Image 1: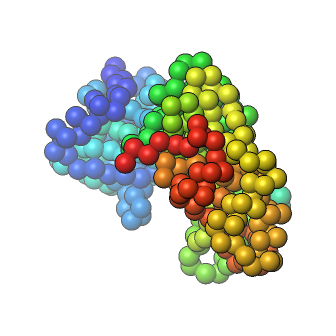
Image 2 (image 1 turned 135 degrees about the horizontal axis):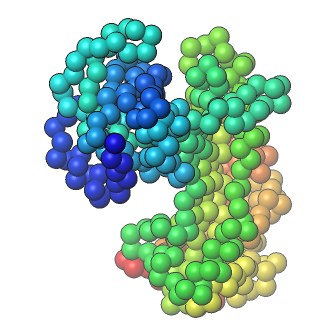
Length: 352
């Protein structure tokens, strides 16, 4: 009976370092499965379109960091629509594999499943089916032809994210953590995967005669930006494709009481009336051109303010300022004119 080893990161790193074998990465295109013993061997197609045989022995280690992966299902042959990275010893032998073609087959020392296929996971408006590849750090949406339409990076934060010199989520009290997590859960994802898939597919079809197509890219990250004795500030950064080569960024600020986790609206940090805050900020930023100033006043929302340790930002995403081709970020240092507009307890500490 084969032994199943599910390794954690520290163990896998030490094994990799101690192994002198070659590494082969690619998608399994043929599997040798027997009822009693399960998966005995398989063929990998590499990125260079080469085919390599891999033999599983009783000493082969199998692991993955992808949620939902089962080493037992893999070794029994139930889950072989995967991509793998295999470390094997350098002493292969030629033998018949698959349809009888002779390939060089290498005994596997360890197998990391790096991607899991979900066929026909999505259907586009015209009926086209799209496959989904789940990876450790994200998800790839691929046409049956193999063309990648969209890469979605796994969202990060607010927990398990740290920024050097800045207190973060783990520094909050437990009760505060729950409320902060609840706020960001309610905020949810600020993009629509299906809509971006449709846009990417339309772009792909328009240029499908060209050899190259740049897959669209989506991401959403939440990270701490500043703190003081009573409050902690966060940034939600969302990267949304304009096309396959250009992305637009959406930046949203949020602030919380460190003791309770209560969310505070950004206008609460200003000592002046809310209706006076934006005109004052635009004055400090030197925005005097009438059209641009009017557009900024119309596009402004309080969550477009982001507090950092040494400055404050006001973010206007691309497309919200009609007279401007791109988005705009106004950055204001905590100089006396700005400090006069803020409550003293609202100003972040500067660890520098």
